[in-house]
Amino acid sequence: MSALSASIPASNPTPAVDLAAVKARQRLAWAAGDYAVIGTTLQIVGEALCEALDLHGGERVLDVAAGNGNASLAAARRWCEVTSTDYVPALLERGRERAAAERLQIAFQEADAEALPFADASFDAVLSTFGAMFAPDAPRVAAELLRVCRPGGRIGMANWTPTGFIGQLFKTLGRHVPPPAGMASPALWGTRERIQDCFGAHAGAIATPARHFVFRYRSPQHMLDVFRSFYGPVHKAFGALDEAGQQALANDLLDLFGQFNTARDGTLAAPGEYLEVVVTRR
Image 1 (cartoon, rainbow, N blue to C red):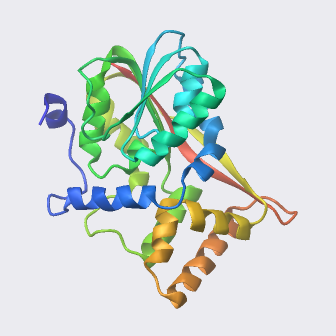
Image 2: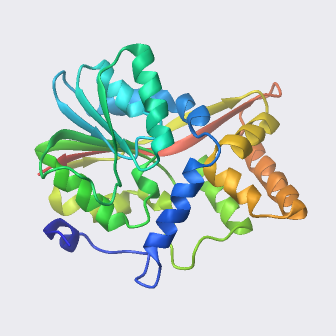
């Protein structure tokens, strides 16, 4: 355990949880379907986070749990030296394809957010959009983000909130396919308390404004079809249920979409709240 790990308070999960088994199941879930189909719609969040971090050309930037590379591409467009990492090779390949299409220079490397293969203080900015928040060992993830960020550098995250659209989507999934006992919700990363617990002792400053990303689909049913086919956690949840269970989950998700939908023309426009995190490393 690193000195940083030892100084960051542990919260759920409890020691009884088999974190390695949880991570293995998560990897399979995110590799299922094709997250890139949905991930690419979130590009604006990566752009906004890079602006919030005030990235400058030539800065060394690490994107952790990068998925198909939204924040990586955004940083590369600002002429940063970008390394994009994820533990799902298929998602890194989607990022490579996008970078090649835009002729952006990005290094891609398979890596676990809980054990980053980089030296201390290697990067000027470390960021993650809706990625590192899903790793099961929150204190270890925070310690790694802090470790590889240089003193005076910035850590930026975009994390879904518990009460927002996606936080409630995961709560709905959990009612039908319960998570392992003792596991903390990843949406706790979308609370100011979690951010303070994880980074406060090592931060010169912390900003955590609430933001919204609006999910836009042709209809609520269209969003359900896309998420069921391509969004790993939803895809795997449906696969774990029998026909009656699948129908019950579909009904509950459609009800949830209706609660958040602000469109009145039959389409879907659902604001999803997230916490925009900018930590200045002490």
